[in-house]
Amino acid sequence: MNGITAYCIFMNTIIDGKIPVWKGDDGEYLLYRTAREAEREIADDIVEKLMQVLDGDRELEDALTREEYIEPVILRPNGTFTDIAGTEYSPGRLLES
Image (tube, rainbow, N blue to C red; front, side, top):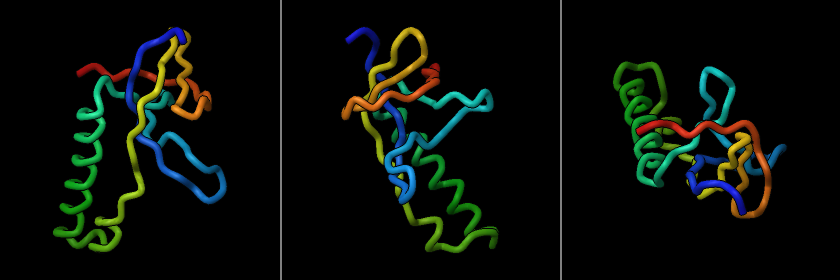
């Protein structure tokens, strides 16, 4: 398989099933060089939501609910990427560390 291994944050939805979660301003799905980088992105999101709880802008239960998970993907030179089940998504962009 031609491409490099990257990591994507997914979630399961009732209607669409598994989907990549986060997109950049350019509409491309965000991919990470390491699982640790993806974990840090989720952790940063959790911290932001907990700060919203402290500011009174969000309920605690909502801030603690996590549906995202990380999977390795293969990113191809044309910007498409494939998950471990073989499903293809596009476009994807590898974030610089």
